Length: 254
Image 1 (cartoon, helix red, strand yellow):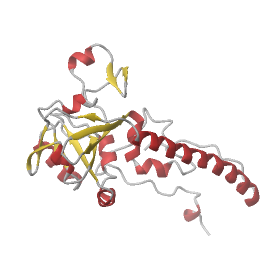
Image 2 (cartoon, one colour; image 1 turned 45 degrees about the horizontal axis):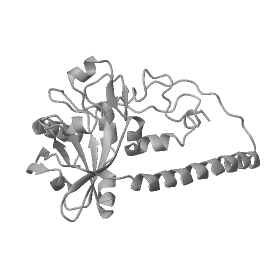
Image 3 (spheres, rainbow, N blue to C red; image 1 turned 30 degrees about the horizontal axis):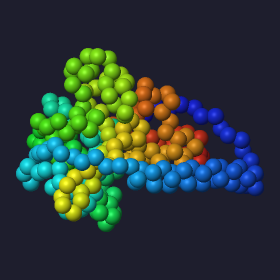
Image 4 (cartoon, helix red, strand yellow; image 1 turned 180 degrees about the vertical axis):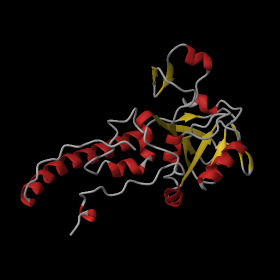
C-alpha cells in the first residue's frame, strides 16, 4: 500500500483538545440524527413486486428468489462482481465479502438473510470460495437476467454507447460488471418485493474496515492511489503488514 506524508495538526493542551472534540461531537451528533432520519425515509420507500421467475444455482440445487430467503422475511444481496470466464472474483467485492462472517448470525436474529450473487458458474464460485475460506451463502445467477435487471451488469451494446445506466444515472463505466447491494422482502403468501438498492460508494455500508479507518488520523490514505481502493488485495495476496519505522516509540533506542 502506498503511503504519503501527512501534515501534523497543532499540538495543544488536553483542555484545548477537549474543546475542539466537543465542537466536532456536536457535528457528529447532527450526522447521526440525519442518518436516522434517512433510514426512516428508506424504510418508507414503496415496494416493487418481483414477477420474473429467477432461478439460481446453489450448492443445494436450483432455488427461486423466494427460496433464497432461507425462511426469513428479508433478504440482502451483495452483487458480487464475478463474470463467466473470470479467473477470480473482484478484489474490491472480495474486500466487502470479508466482512460478512461476523455479521451473519446477528443479521439472522433480525430476520435478515445475507448472501452474494454472481454471474459466474457455480463451480467457479465454489472454487474461489474455498480459496478465500468463506462460508456465507453465495449463489450463481448464470444464464439469468438478474444482475442486469438490478443494474449491475451491462451488455456490450450498452457499453458501446459510451454510457450505461448505473446508480440511477447514465454514466461511463469501465466494466461489464458493477458492485451493488439490493434488498428484498417476502410476504406471508411468498411473494417477493424489491425494496431498495444502492451502488457506487453506497456499497461502503458493507465495508466495516473503512468505517474504522475514518476514525484515524491518516484516514483511508487513498489520495496518492491511482483510484480509491487501489491498495486493496484479495486477503491471501497481501504483502506483510507495515511495521513501525525507525523513530517510532517502540523502535527508539533507550
